[in-house]
Length: 188
Image (spheres, rainbow, N blue to C red):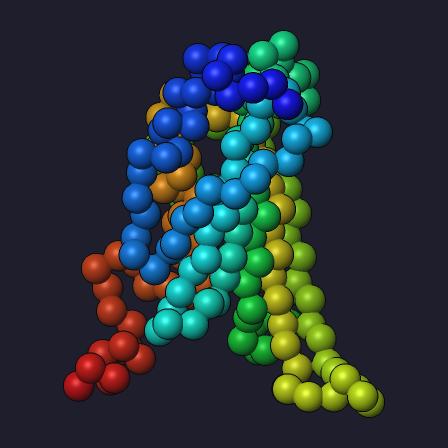
């Protein structure tokens, strides 16, 4: 990976846009080491989503930049994400969950007018039950979303907010300014 001081202006502007924004308080962002073999320049954030003090989802958002461009990306900048969340057991068997989870990404990007092209990804649902020496807690279910897209606008804050909206949906957070019934009962 090239030295950060030699980074192209398009990459440094994109990184500044990602650093400048602050999502909702339930989503904790932290800069992490970026993968070094995917593109000449990379920047990465990790996110932890808290609900009621418990971690309910996590994710990574990686910005890649190849000044030479990349045909599959249809551009020279690419955003890549991995989001994981534990699900309630009854949701894991919902045959529509994967399609709905994919719309959380599209809706989040569109909600914040984060223009993009060449979007693609996968949504995976898993259910795990422990047996024998590993027997323990009740069965668990998880959702994993892997996606990437090429930003076509310079507003990387919009892409961050769109990604955070997806994280919030994946974690089951209510929209900003709306309290869940569980929260209302606890405060009463």
